[in-house]
Image 1 (cartoon, one colour):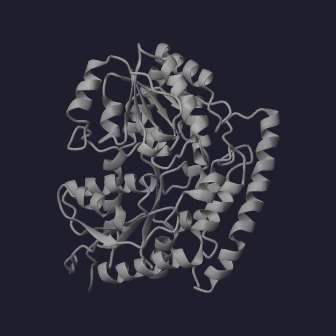
Image 2 (cartoon, one colour):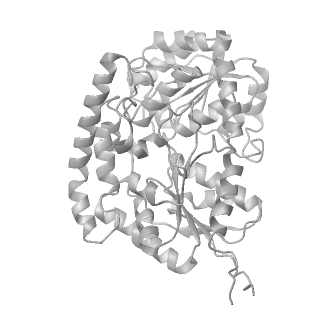
Image 3 (tube, rainbow, N blue to C red):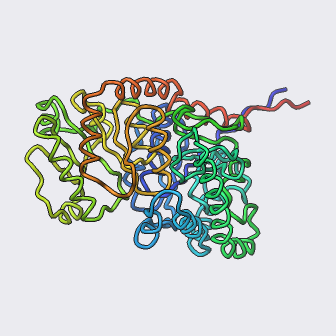
Length: 454
């Protein structure tokens, strides 16, 4: 006879509060809430609690108080990460910080407590949330690995030698000189990572963790599935395992909901037929020289082209050059997605964060990539190769002549918009949040089916 199916056990998400890591998982969780998926839980530190609660649009998405993230991208860590492409200091510093024993152990123990309380049948965990990955592995909970940056970076040790090394900023087709540069950087990067994680690995072994080195490739192998938020063609192709799913941009079905630009900002966008949107993410801290260079470049493209610049108050205060009347600054944009979707927005200046880049492609925007750290250099190279945008030649240097000249090219040459629209369509075909929710349902059902008994 067939035993009745047990009551479905929960699905639990775990992330840090950094927008780059959190946004894809929140959008996927909101899609599952919209479908009425029962018993959804989300573990994240307290500063993001309101975002979890506001993502409930159907069945409840319950908040679990996560430990404070062990990775704060500021100070010395930010300075190391922002040195430019093909430098190992930033990657090594980030790897060492992620594995810091005390901070990671707090996330590990808090997540184990949540697992005991919730008893999830499946977890969905951001790749940088090492403590939660350790906890899921220890507790034997199947998990999906969420990778919001170029997914090839997870498989660093398995990439062919002619594949651009992560954080190199090199193009897919390497010249002879670039092949040598790439190989030498690959060796230097491996050595730097080995040195950086040696001490933390020894301390993590005392906890008897299955992946003491914290190698993301090992977590990827152990995962029930790996989610990447791109498509091959934007991401450079590489030998991919069967359980890697490239889902395209993770964008809510309705981008004109409660978070849309409202009131006067909407009216301003409606009134101006050519707007350049400048949104450099939530972590970038530009120097006064960089800010002034942007201000000078944006001055040169007006008044024919208006500018909407998302610029925090402390960054605006650091400007020494006055902004012209055609440049509007906002400390906060209620919905970047709705701005990118607006028909009068004709170009997007971004820092090369993976989420923002793929959102720009989703809405067919030509882009100027101004990368400031690590994976941003790789995203910039991919944008140029895909024909969807242009990038700074010598980041993190910001040259006003270069910025203004490249923006005017993006605004006058229709090929960039055509390519961005093409890749936006390919991204949408990958399924986004809806396909992610389908896959989670399939994975969660694997161990919940009724079993035959005699």
